[in-house]
Length: 453
Picture 1 (cartoon, one colour):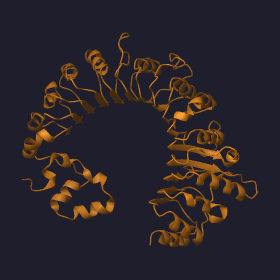
Picture 2: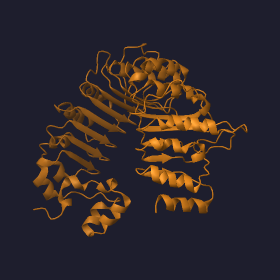
Picture 3: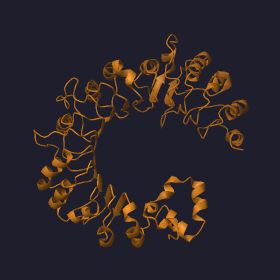
């Protein structure tokens, strides 16, 4: 009979990270045992006796620091995921704990004998996923490592030192998910050749610390390299992005905030817009992005009835004046981040504000609306964004019944009491409200009391 729930090894992870602050405070006040186990700064070790008794229930196990012989010598017949973090004495025997292991994670580890360890890994019959961080491979282990990768479905490597040149005849037909982040000792061309050996990729995440030249990916063909690739996270030059898009027949998710997205990329993407579910453009900067225009975003909103999330940048509000084509993603779009830039030449922008509000009112499934400005925004003439007041058209957004988050940080707002009361009445689901409603501190405090009495 367990005396407390924390005797279960599965509960010995820092579960406090899943609790709201108020709930965490309540929990740590229950008793000393609860406080010790829920303390964010501690990682309690599971009771060895409890682990021995319940080891057949354990499916996910982590070892941190020096591996203890008692726990490492146990057999966990149903263990599928094994993690070693900051361990300096890993040996081939460490893998004997999990005969059916399918996921192995290594972070800042050193081996007693690197060659024998990787030979032992190669003998794990069910291994499908491998994650490594700051891994150093010696030459004797490199060939075995690539043999292991050739039968993986998922590989994540971060800050590793790898010789990314597998044998020319080697292919990776089972690889569906590949994440390569700042691998040391490899150039973009070698990495691209490796990616091409993974014809069934579905997800690709690539970040490289080296400069991407215009010819760095000249080895990529124009189409056909990855017919199943759906999700792309890329940090590179604009020409690299266009080449990748040429090889994606049905792109569903594009996370390209760190790229130079341009007309070239958009022209390649345009025939495939119908498949898109999520896209994040380069982040909002202090000035208008000459490569990402409001017309591009308008085209996506008008062309994709299944779009779920779009994160844009600073775009001209005047790019959305064409009302001949409606936004067709009203029933699917749940996340929308964009900063509308309104002209500041002295003309009244009320009509333009109302036009934008009417456009937004068609997004009836929207849960998150973020119209925040850029960080460290300079005092420029075009800095003013959407005016969240009833007189400018805020009332049009009464159709957004599902809205949970409204963010308008780093924007200049002059809301009145009637605007705040309208928000509190019409958006009952609102959970997150970020931004300064009024520049006057006293008025701001009064409005906060209206929203959160």
